[in-house]
Image 1: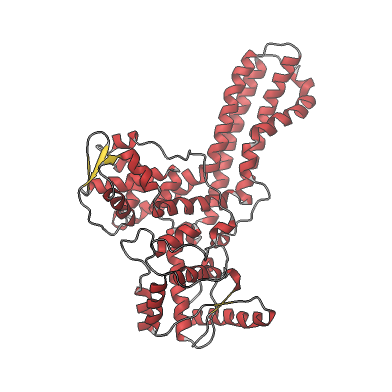
Image 2 (image 1 turned 90 degrees about the horizontal axis):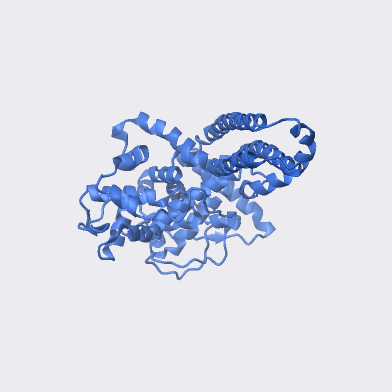
Length: 472
């Protein structure tokens, strides 16, 4: 292995510090990747091109590496400079899907694995073994759509109440009030408490199976803040507070903020806010939050975390827990509704039963909404907190402190602006849904602000059809 050449390749940066929509941000945003996985994919791409440059036979990328390669080809100046570092142009050779080529490309893939292991050790599975990095979570997809089940929960409960009413009618008319209402409320509380224990236990077990995965294990502090608060504004509050602490931003009257130091630093989130504030006169914090939310680096964070949510929520283990919760609470509600029907049919007083049932319905619906986010707003952050705290203060920066302590670390002068700023347009129960096609890079995307010419065209999306590259 040419260690000197590899060190040069490793040190090569695909990003300019001041780019708002540079290579890494664009790659992460277009594919809805986390920051860790984006950097991991770029590293593996560098390793792949190093193997291509230092061997005379064809090597072949993985699906993930090929996405990075396609992106880099669009940044033509950067790609040319990277190839110049190796001393030769590395050409992209797409497959034509001809059967005669299959064996050639299969041999190239096997050769790539062998060369990689000789030079770098074992290949990271999430980059090399899967077309979609979240397949590495090994979560079986459920055949049920839990979000649709939750949306139609009350409708299904009302429908189920009819057969339940017919089945237990003879029993219902034997139990007199107030014994039924008292017993029913006690039963609901008991089932609810048992269900809460069951759900938390199951979700904790599910996370325990996922936390060793490299993507989950390497979530950033801001990605975890977004999980916990389910709001992009919560991330912006942390960034803005740090700028105020560093005397780069000053709080004015009327909930306005003024940029007093335009110098950029190492933190891309802070730099993004500074660049936004440069474009405007002192503005209300509410308006500033809205402008910042539209920027690629914050949009990327939102989309990456939503994609993780969607994958876990769509899994069989998660859906099974939700179904148990919906069946348990739905059964309780059908009993109450059946009693209501029987009382109405027999012309009995039902006022107290209605008073008891209405809040139970709302509590049930609210709780089911909370369950959709419980693993993300509570279990993952709580478990991560314990690990972060065990590292000690010397191992943490301000982002991790903000994740750990939340609003407790915010300046008292800044708190009123947070209360003034409108909440994110997303409620605590909302999240985006991305199809599998969203996670693939599009060759036809425009160059945006890449600052390079788009003279080369991908021609077609490689996907699994990308053969690789030749040697010389």
